[in-house]
Image 1 (cartoon, rainbow, N blue to C red):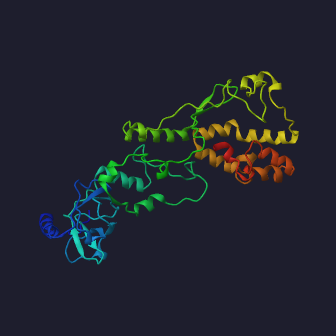
Image 2 (image 1 turned 30 degrees about the horizontal axis):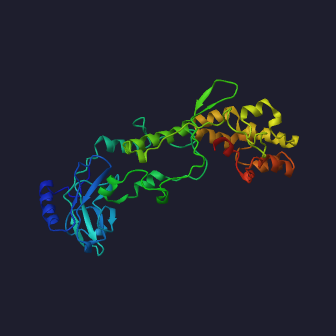
Image 3 (image 1 turned 135 degrees about the vertical axis):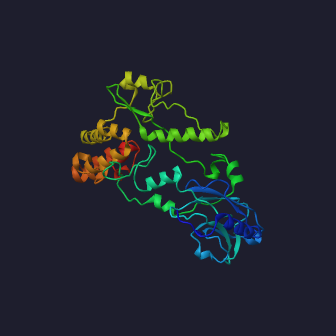
Length: 370
């Protein structure tokens, strides 16, 4: 392991640095052994005139300048911050110090020399993951053609981006006191999810086969974790209620049709008496297009693949969907009008029926996933 002061006894170095740090107004401390690639830096609260200041890690001797430090941890711009989250880079050296620098690059704080144990299990695991090997079941799976879960579209090395980015200052007292889902809608902590229907599984008509939707498990797992963090707080607990898609006693109100008593008929009444609903003549060509849309959107094999692994299903459909044309090469409208040569009126009626106007420019994938 490299050391910033390989020739200097560690005890002597610590004594010299400690004597220097006592006289500086910003106090920096790490209260646990540096056995992992991340740690908390505890800060004192210096007088307001010292803000902003920058925290770095590097050599401990007094002659070193700010630009000569190994790396910058964070900038502290105002009072109230008592903790920094420190992401230790892979090439960090042992027995260095944390230093605080004023806006004029004057030294205003320094920690004791710190020992970095890069032989610990956490560091070894990080090195294995960085090298692309699996050390445990929780290791990441590369999104490549070989793994079969590479989503089409632009991707960047997000892990490397985060490694190069220090997280910044944290007010620990404020962070610990802050519940999840606090405040109201005006605080923008809520997201409108439309009807908020969260499907759990698919059951095919005419069979007893039921396939769980693995992608939706992420939502339920997130809710479980949030409810645990909020420790049963009734005002911040997420609850689910059953969604009833259809019911025999549900009202069927279309085209203004009502019974003699002024009420709309129920679903079961309409099914038993066609006179209780308005009979609409559908152009056979429009009906043919509608049937094809349903066949594409409800094709059992691709629906089952989507339920099991949305990434592999997406890639398969984009490459081989629509009979080998490529599922994303044609919009719904273009596929039926330009490729299958249905006329404009029939295509428009079939695709934009049921109040879903403007849908024709969508990809067929929206039928399968949304």
